Length: 223
Image (cartoon, rainbow, N blue to C red):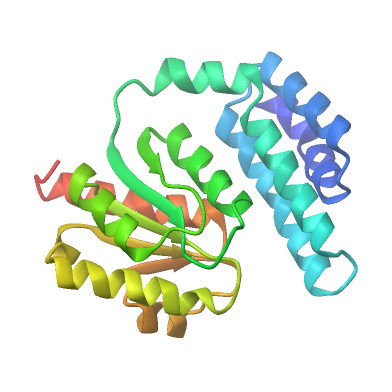
């Protein structure tokens, strides 16, 4: 960990500067030094948040956001990273059905969330993008997940998310699981409108919420 502290800021800066080669090099060095993968991912996420702020200030553009997401996915996909997580996470702590709602083809945020959930020992059933409410309901009934995750980058996707929650009610399964909505544009008011249990603007925050839900369920003797 001491060695990682020396290069942590370098890694954050490399992500925020979209230096893909340097990010990979620093990540591989940290893994060889025995750094915890989640510590590395948290540093990468800090860089991602900087990219988001630069986008909001109009210093960066949508292509830069996409590039940052691709860098994050590349880190998650490094052989050393996946080997470590697969070795540790044989016992799953919860099940999640996940998808980008109908009308939205963006998958980077969803894929990052999925990767982080899997590294935290969740089983994730990823439905993909542009998923209609009927498909969400069908998979919820089939897999009986603890959590349903809905992703949407475009502002109008809050209506599609609301439709999914309404369909859960109609199918009589809404009270059997937690629902989390993810997207940079979401607010507390949006979350209430959608009818979700929680929302997250950041993948790490979403994972923390899901971990708390599983912990509560375990404490109640439901897991």
